[in-house]
Image (tube, rainbow, N blue to C red; front, side, top):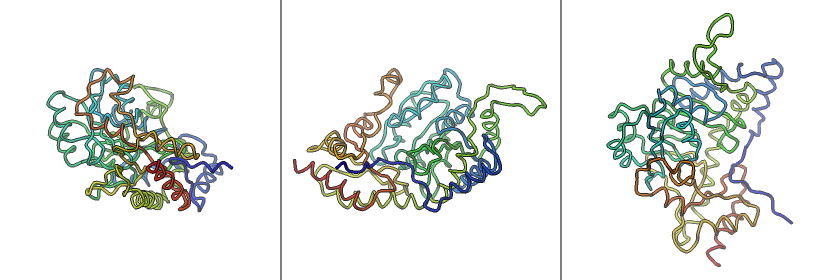
Length: 371
């Protein structure tokens, strides 16, 4: 008998059915379009949740990053600093704008952009923007990064796609820079199946993005377009899913934390295994629980034994400067992100995991040390 499939992280609709209430309202009122009450309210509710002035709901987190770069004035030939240790969706929009990424190494304290390396990069290049990522729900060292961006008068964009609900010194990730980006992809802590949100305290720039995202349609009695436009606005249907999901965000964060603590309690005694770092300045959302291995057991062994038992686990992100497409771009650092990639594993972190599921996962992992 094949054991049930355990996913790394998958959609988890509210037990109360909040999402269906908003979807039904959209159907009942015939607002099946990339505008409507759900879109307006989802934008407002996210802005309220993270305590920022304004937000615009878009088709994806990638679209939100693209619009943030465009609103930051990034144009062909510009340089944008970006962490190497991230998913390609962080770097791709830089290319969309015709700019060049310079990849910055990570630190072992947070797994995110190293402020010391960032400072060195500023002495080597003149970037138009800095794009910092809060990976796996772990906040970067934002005080130092914000200070550097202010010192050099450079726009700061936060890719908080994986960190909705994470705080740094009590402030939500995505709200400390000039722009913040959240993702509602199917694997995120809350989902709309796809979709993203751009937030900022600069209402004029959010209004500009809203204009661009609706094909730059001018306020005229006919179709008139004075600027290049994009079809990036979120659907009223999936915005309704987002509104329902937002009601259970705190519950999902609590479950993610319990999963991390379970692994921490049951695995930390294993030789050569350490949990991902939780910096004292940060209160993470624990989107994924990750481990580092050093010595006796390799990431491949862990992923293999879990996979053979129908359980999904993954390697950590392969750094951008090691990717075939991005290998031509500059990298600044000592290769800490390569070390994390070579040693790291993302463990199942689905909020629907039961205690029996977690017990099974842990026992399989522990069995590798007995081989």
